[in-house]
Length: 276
Image (cartoon, rainbow, N blue to C red; front, side):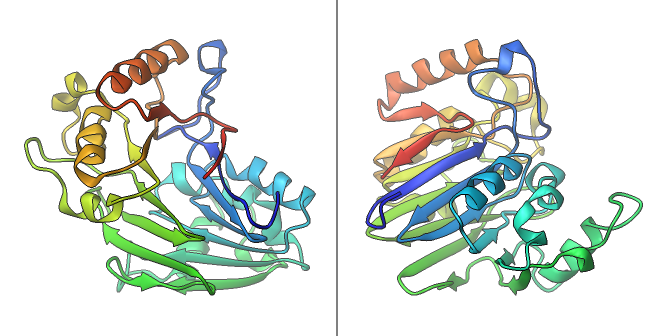
C-alpha cells in the first residue's frame, strides 16, 4: 500500500453467526470486520471472525500500531478478538474503543467479561501487546490520531450500538449497521452520518418482505439503505451484515435489484478491497 492511497477492506460481512458451505463461497461467511488503511495507519471496525484474517495481513505488513472500534458487543462483532494475534505481540500497540455502554460498562470491563472462563480459557492478562482501553459516548466526536475525525451516533439496536462517520485523508466513510429503521421515517442519525459520504456501509440484513416477522431484531433492509443514500447524497452504498441464510445467488439478486434504484450499490464480500 502506498502511503498516499486510501484503502478499505472487508474482512467479514456476515451478520449474527459465521457460515460456511458452497452456497456462501463468493460473498463469504465471516462476521463483521472492516479495515481502513491510509498513510501507514490501520483502523479496524469490529472484531468478528474476519478479524483473524485481518490479523494475518497486519502481521505480514509489519503493522505495530492498530485501533479497533466496536459498534457494540454482540458475539458476531467480538468473537474474533481472542484470535486477533496482535493483542499477544509485545511489539504491538492496540487501542480498543467502545461507546455503546457508556456509563454502564467500560471498554476494559467489556473485554474482561468477554475473555474469561468458562467462555474462553484465558483472561486478557495473557495479552502482551500495549493495550489501550478507550471509552466514549455515542454522540461524541473522536480524534484518535492527527488528521482523523470520527463522529459517532446512537443506532437503533437492542443493547445499544454506535454508528461512525470517519473523515480522514479527504474521504468520508459512514458505517451504519446493526440498526433498525422505522417504516416511513428516514433515520436522522443515519442521515447525519451518511451526508455526502464517499462510501456508506449500511445494514441490509433483511429485505422488506422479511421485516414484519423480524421487528425488534435491530436490523434494516437494502431498500431503506437506498432511500437514505439518495437523501444523504452518498456516492457509493455497500450492503453489509448479510443474513446467515442469504446465499450467493440471493445476494446477487439483491445487488441487481438495488442497483436498479441506486446504481452505485454493491453487496460487500469477504476480502473485498476498495481504493477510495
